[in-house]
Length: 104
Image (cartoon, rainbow, N blue to C red; front, side, top):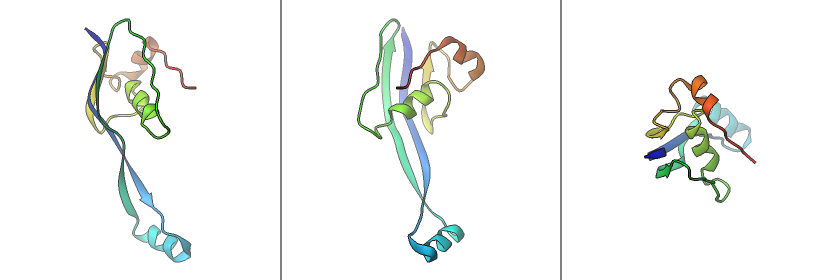
């Protein structure tokens, strides 16, 4: 049985593009141009009970975003993650009592 189950996890953010200069700032205010940024794209993995896991990778690879979804801080755009059979976003206050996460 998997302790952590992640299937087709994806997280998108919408970024507003700011045009340079005073005229660009005014245009951006009236008609902001928005782009979708994929922070995590189609991530799938399983971690069996008792296994130790570390996330390593380049800056901007989506490590922190993935961990935030696993802890229920962020809701995935699509896909799901299940920790010990529970969805982190549901009843988060009780869920976080049973987990530990270290950023550093």
